[in-house]
Image (cartoon, rainbow, N blue to C red; front, side, top):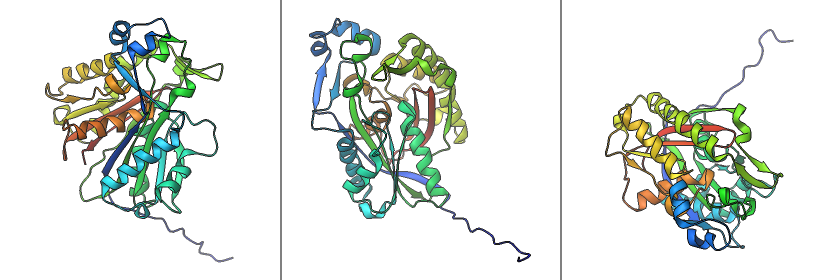
Length: 328
């Protein structure tokens, strides 16, 4: 036996990453609060007061989770200016695939034209996009990939009990996507993430079939525990809350969104910090909500190239994650 053992060679990648392009896709059907009030015991006023939603988007029967992911992903690739062949990994954040196999990522990659690349699903529910974005950035920085397409999306239509007024009013269908690649300067900050597994049952599948959440418990947790995680993400990026131009939290509930913004402003965030309120007309799309809001806000001119954005996702698990990014 040789006295000198063989030594492994490790890959290394670029120091910095950034978002290169964005895209999104929504369910084709617009369902208003008045529409829901025709089938369940609710009202437009009741829904607006509790969750801030006016309408939500649900998928047509022919719209699958994968097809929405393909649409959003293709738009993000086009927006990045890259060819699909230049992307060598795809991470799909979701918790609503019909079954555990086949995964959404491989099907989405093949349809877009991302060949022979790594493709895997990631399930951190509503925190999924921030988890996947952090994973994509680290894949590139570690040399395991050169450019990564991150998709976050859900099709809740099949997982909601439409007679359950507490939950049927909240959830929606859609996907958002971002292309991540190398950069000369940091464009994606370190991820601040974690979990509270002792509270896992506050959001679960009832009868292994329908999504259910204990609304008040989740509300109390999100409004007290998430703002400090957002602060951690800002500190990890070496910034101050006053540096943040826009806050894009998971679109769980407008009251939660506004509570997080209020707490961050009390700690130093600017009064003119833009706050995502995409939930009003999109609903809660879980892993899709942050990238969908990002794409919509940029298209509407609410955020623009170079703006410093604070992302924070939170939900079932209970899992949470956030990071500071620069708007593409």
